[in-house]
Length: 510
Image (tube, helix red, strand yellow):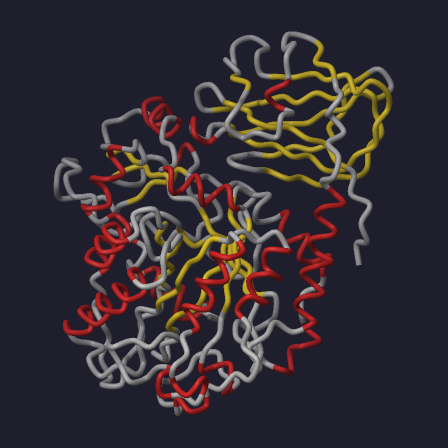
């Protein structure tokens, strides 16, 4: 991966924009996943529309995963490159101890619920015995050319109950047809192989990179055709991040936005069509990397409003492929915890890359970091300090907020003082982490909230935030109190709060 430079430019150019193909839109409309808008709509109308847009069942399943894994593995693993040029000898690919089960088991033990394998990176080297090119592991010495990495990962995922996805680079620096219409046929053939030979595929991941091929030409990607094929062969799969279901958060740091809306304006307004809004299969306004994408003032900035959530990607190492020199640069468990709070805890899904080494194994450095990271999260969230709390004031029943079920909720009318919940903790409790969730099957609606605690006869601020979405986590200086209050200060229509939790983080901050 390491996509910052080319990817930023290519994503500006419309690869994500093609997410709004007419085929996809017709499907989403039936699921109330998007609504076409026009310039005559008032802010009140737009807010109401945005509040009622919801994820598709596939998007909801994906959001609930919270943690997904990336596995960058291929010819680059053996050359030390991040981006190969498509000229390396397939005979270089020869892992001596490849164990896909070890990859998936270590991922699952860390709480990762789905993994994505780089079936083909930009160099064009395929990790399955494709019929579309000789540039694949069938011409490598590994298993005498009879191996199939994609199959081994798919089988391990099935055995261990982990979701399975494939990354397929549209950019192919090896295939001779790249830069011509024939290459779109090659991609269709490759996708067909991957989507028909390995059982259920839960996510298909397209990068936005679009460079030159071996003939010096760039390709016009037929994303609409590829999307239609995926919908046909694996309808339950989400398509990311140059795709219609999941967007790139905009950085590779693992840190999402403070204000992250899953409902965003998409489609570039056509100023010459008198606002007819009949053409919505155009690129989204901007490059989707702004500090905020779906605020009230931005809802008018597209041809449609769409549920288009963010995937937050980062590698456990500085690079995306394995490099021995980075063995001592694996992210610490404490930093991985911070990443979790700033990705999953900011209404995103974390896509964490763990690259196997030349043996075909996750190293002990990576595995140990994953284990300790999981341990930290388990320690932090082992006990909700609100579990025995009693609601006081207008709201009497908070059972739905403490049942660990994001499909139940308390609905606030936002009229009068029906925007707050006061809770008696039944004695003093000490905490420094707030967890909030909305029932996003009803929409994403909270715009601003504040958590307060009772001290010396008055309410004081513990933490405040903007969006919640599927999950929001906030850390703040440790507080001891016997009473807390959550107030929703601003919302779109009636917010459906699904969960609330207070926790004490005493894990090592180093």
